[in-house]
Image (cartoon, rainbow, N blue to C red; front, side, top):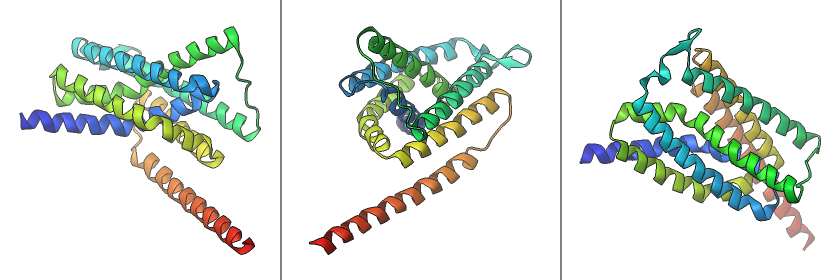
Length: 236
């Protein structure tokens, strides 16, 4: 019983940490929609992604060939990582260009807006599958008890739903943080692509520099806040 609880907590922690990637992607995707539709799209996308991840768990348990060679020394996992990494890389570069050059797309209305909504939901689900493939395989390696993994995935998704909205708003209101997040997604896209080509890139090479850059940006924000407060006091 204690072992099962420890495994459950371990998988929840793993899913929450990897869920940060999901939150960044969702924040960028739903920004294109009218504000009144953003929360609904975020929730629907995450719920569908949850079911897709549970289905993927069942698939991994049933089909061990997911990591076995399919053709030209590539497995199903490799193909998913290559395609997902390429898409994420292209999406992040495009969003950085739009942010820097102020080329925001119009929100649209009617059929166009509805089409964008469906497209974003599909992208959320597909990218979640890409992000989750390694965590799913890791979870299956920790335990073959399907219920433990499902409970861990459901609880972690509840946590993601809670902090995705405030974190998304925090990122989108600050252009420098948004560009930093998009740069983070570029590094993740490159990493996924290289992993699909069987090139191992230590995660520390990605997370440590990005963490350092985030700390520097937070210090800059704190400096600007204190400077602004000092100026307000001087004018009073």
